[in-house]
Image (tube, rainbow, N blue to C red; front, side):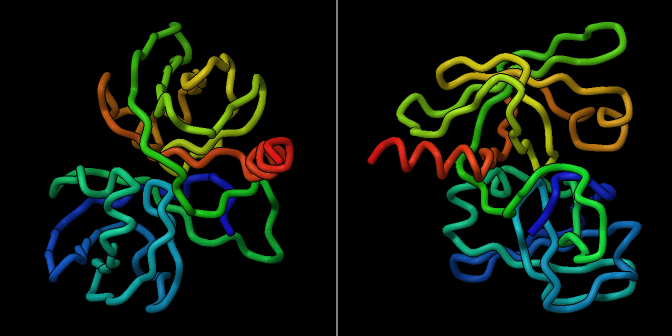
Length: 194
């Protein structure tokens, strides 16, 4: 389980294809603290560390993961948000994040508010996922609060700290982002649907 509080960024160093799998090798400031078989969220996608070599480590994404996330859009040199699993004795600062991406959204607009930024994200018009005003959403692994909720579109506001310390500073209009909708909202929607 994760909280959506990003620890650091990682830089993609290598992409290696093996059958339908892709091995991603990253460099990060926390590589020395990682262990093989550890779960780490990469842009909100829970992946297992399979190798560590010096200051680089490798994770593997299967075809299912590549089809349902933005990992397949990554290029060498790109940054990703990193978060290790929540420590059982740690503070719960974000919201419940599973590291299981529900779908990929698209950045529709970015507004500079002279002290913060508003990002508007659209998602599949056929999706049964929902957002609610002041509810939680995870974008590329970052726990955020929805400020405008519409059918298949929502907005979030980004403070300067989050902008500077996550991949939000690298995003542009039409970029693809990983979305994990609030787990409580998903259960409520499912129950109400029955």
